[in-house]
Image (cartoon, rainbow, N blue to C red):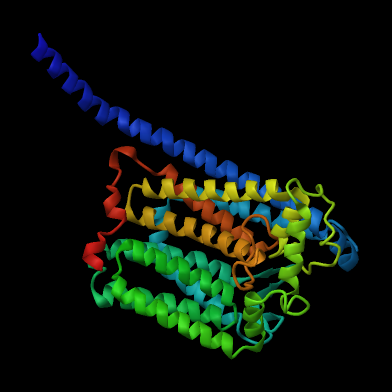
Length: 407
């Protein structure tokens, strides 16, 4: 009798592992996907509310319509919503066949923006293409296209990433080419963001650290030299090291942002009651919208947004790790890193923890191309979730390459 009970227990355990484990995995992935979608909607809603609160007065003064910027943002959100649905619907493996076209289109647009009278120049930088009724920022498309290409290449060459040519030279050549085009605009913030995401993806995939390490160090040296030979950016770096000294000059915006955080206190001054947005904090509805959140909603509001981004990143990571193939894993990880690092850099800049960079806060700052591409990135994560087969889950070690093989 005891022997028979042991056999029945073994049979039950085997059945549980075979049928219950995939169901539990699927249930957890369902929760992660639903949470990802809900958090994104919450961040977008907060962005719409804070955008109107921040931009109504400047829009009234500049355009004669307090709803001008809000209406434009709503149009871009509608476009981004369509892009998100499309990205979530078309099977993501089909992207692999479109990679050469996407990469070529992104390169052409990045080149076009550098051509006089084609690229729109603002503040000494050519970052936009002017179209009827709108402006497009090709670097936003370039970020996502680079992630798709890297995910495709790194998964295809997984077994040969320890080779110098296939594992380092080819991906670095494509990545470097994209980075140089963005840097030529110049756009130091987007260049740093793209480089961070690309190097993180390559390291995770298994590209040798002895190749990546010197490249990162040489890139930092080159970046530093470019900053030293650019008076405006050099002053921004000096303002970062001594904000109080430069608060009336290049550090003015960061200083006003810090004042906004300080005056908000724990619970804030109340929605719409910000004083810094009254022409004290320039362009507060774009890169510096987070200090207005801190002023109007206080520490409670800022911590809520930080928690939302942390949840979004956790859900994106979970979906990526449970993807059914390496391409989906790398693609999901790249999209998650893009959103996470952009939020981290923006918050670091406005809280004076990082030098000033022109990067918006995902889903909250005003900006058409950025919000569209961020919503498409969320759509790709939902696409990966929809095509996850629990019974075919790859081992986690297939995602994280063995570091002893690539060190």
